[in-house]
Image (tube, rainbow, N blue to C red; front, side, top):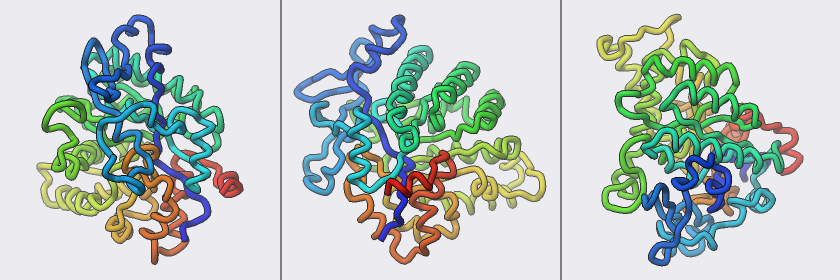
Length: 380
């Protein structure tokens, strides 16, 4: 039986089709994202005719349990769960699933990190963040929104981060992997790390947000390819290592980074490899930490991992760190545990001590995103 208080560290809204056309700066209105019906399916389109993705895989909550054969990248907005864009229905779906609070990420918005025009991307994020803040105001104790931030211009990113904090959003997501020459070990990001720490805004690296290359969309060799999906943790692992080895978390000890929707079981090998590299390969790990700290120490202090159903990761929790693990339902996407989250959690947490279960399914998420556990317990 799962603990009483369950908080999802990774759920999603589904942006209404007219969100950007209504809210984006008028300068970008004719280039704004929109949903168009093409060959009988709704597609996410940007600019004149750039198809980013179908909507099926980000809108099929529950189908995996009832009719998995119907899951496809294609889909219609008419079939999107209303809770994706209606906050009252979202809260009702949370009650149905037995979830007391949720951290909210975009659905379509994940793909916009690969928009080539930085100004357009920033305008998209600006409009989305305003809409999300309004969505969460329906019940700010239970709905915690994560802003989208473009770091192509670091100062612009800082301004948007500060605005997101004023709007009441609970954290911010940045690309899981930036352009190769601008990876997160570069000194240009220092003011942003400092701002995030000062604002108390945890940062997220969420799947499908790479700044470069094809992530999803029409054509061959996208992340829908099974091999790419199966190895997707490679990119956030690189970003995390860049931050750790360059001393970001030594300089900003209160900065938290969440690695979201990449599961857990990749982490122990990376932790072991980081420490080995730091200890044995001095030329490959140039920065030397103070006070005898190891790379894995910064992981355990500054990084949290959001997962859905990684039973192997649960078994490895002593290496990962129980305090570093946060469950998420991924509602309303096709792989979501909704509406069977409690059943699935009871299965994968079988045999785990109750105090550890409580941290994994809610306590750590409450700590990182400042949920009131007492209020959540009253709602459970």
